[in-house]
Amino acid sequence: MNSSSPRPKSLIELAAGALAAATVATVLFVLPAEFDIDPTGLGEAMGIKGMSGYQVGALTTQSGGVYRDQSSFWLAPFESVEFKYTLAEGQSMVFDWRAKSSAAADVIYEMHSEVDADPEQSVTFELSRGESQRGTFVAPFDGVHGWYWENRGLEEVEIVLDATGFFTHGTTYGPSGAFTKVIAEDAN
Image (cartoon, rainbow, N blue to C red; front, top):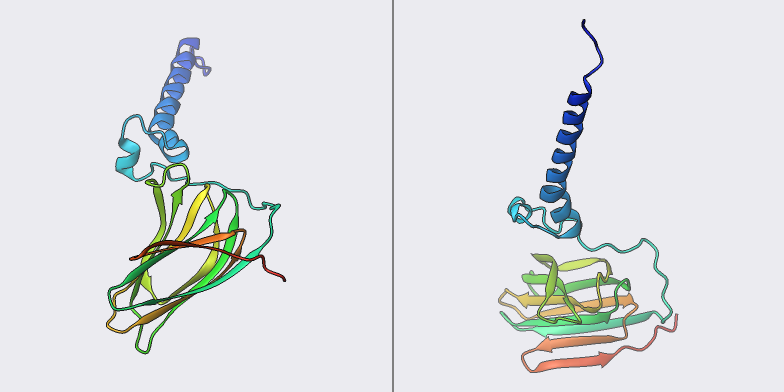
């Protein structure tokens, strides 16, 4: 007797196989990529560990005011400076910085953040070389968020930064230490 319906034993075997495959896929791919949990180490080897990154909502409302800051920094050849705003998780800013020089500016820059709870823990969002950058940034966690600039050219460079956002303090880190300035609320 030929029957087209599967035997109950084979249905159980198929279900068990599907469950085993789903478990393996979860451990090897989903946990490392979505939850930054990598029990086998394979997620890091494949480059998918922490792939989902930090998540923030499309709309966030703020109780504080909007602040605008305009700062500039002069860098001699091979000199560097770091500048960061203090932002809470979910707070945002719009920024535009440019390097001005009498010749073509050659600036290495890094946009990164440091976690308030653990200043040794930092996250780099972009590391590149260029004369300008503009965009928006939403803080993935409470901390300081900003840029490191290094003049790699032979001429003096002025870095001009214009930012508007939900920050009240900006800190410059340079050869003479850290200097924090209070930023006044934008009247507009």
